[in-house]
Image: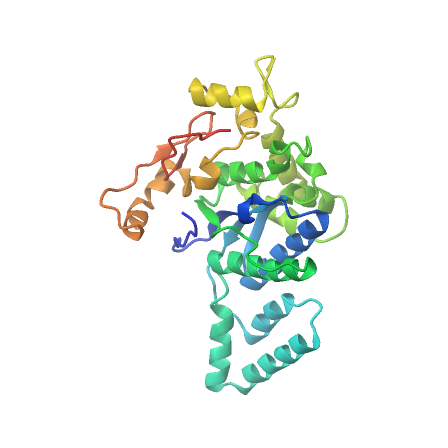
Length: 337
C-alpha cells in the first residue's frame, strides 16, 4: 500500500511511513538530515499530527505518527499552524500571512474559502507526507543547485494498531535503523532518530516533542502517572532485551547473515531483539500491522478499495515471539534480510 488512506472511525490512527530518494542515492549528510528533521516537526504541527518517533538516513526516512481526528479549529489556531511553516518568513511570506489574516477577519465566503484551503491539508497522512517531501525538495534543490525529482515514487505506509505491542515494536524497529546500517551500536548515539532526540531532551530542559512521542507509544505499559524516563527505559529494554549482547542466542553470537539464514532457510524462531536488527519487510510492506483481530477488521475495506474478488488473509508474523501480531499483506519471499 503506497499511500494508505484507510480511516479509523472514532479513534486516532497510527501510521509508519517510509520514502526513499531517487535510485536510492545517498544524498543526505548531517546538514540535510537536520533540516529534514526540523521540517518533519514543523509540518506535523501544521497538520495536527503527532510524531511518535522517526529516523532519517542518507537516502530515506521513516516516521511513525499518530493522526487524530480533526476537530473544530479557530481562526487563531489556523493561523498559528500556518505560521509554523514559516519560522523565518520572507517579505513575500509575511505579506501572504497578513492577507490571510485580513481575509479571515473579514468573514464571508472568502474567509470560508481560506479555512477550507488550510483545513484540507490537515489531519491526513498523505497531505503530511506530501508537504514534508515537497518542502524539503525545494530546499534541497535550491541549496545544491539541483533540478528534478528528489524522491522515488510515492511513500510506503503501514497502518499500525495504535497501542501496545504493535506500536511499541514498530517504534523500536524504526529507531534501530542506524544500528542495522552499521552506523552505531546504540541508537541513542545517532542524533537523527526519535529515541536519540528523546534521550537528549530528557537530559536537558529543552523541547519535549520526542519525549512526548515515545511516552505515548508506551503509555499503556508505564501508565499516565509515570515519568517519561519510564517510557524511555521500556523502549530501551525492547531494543536491547535483558542485557548482554543483543546478537547473542543461547550463548552463540549471531550476525545478520546467520540470522537471515535461520529465519528464511530454516524457518526458525529467534529472540525479538535479534530479529529487529534485520530488515523485516512486515514493518514496511505489511499494509496493516496489529493484533489478528485488529487486522481482520480492515479486510473488507481493503478488499473494496483494491477491487479484489477474494478477501485478504490475516497473516501472523513469523520468525520471533511477536505475540498476537499479524499483517494484511502476504510476504512470501525475503521477509528478513
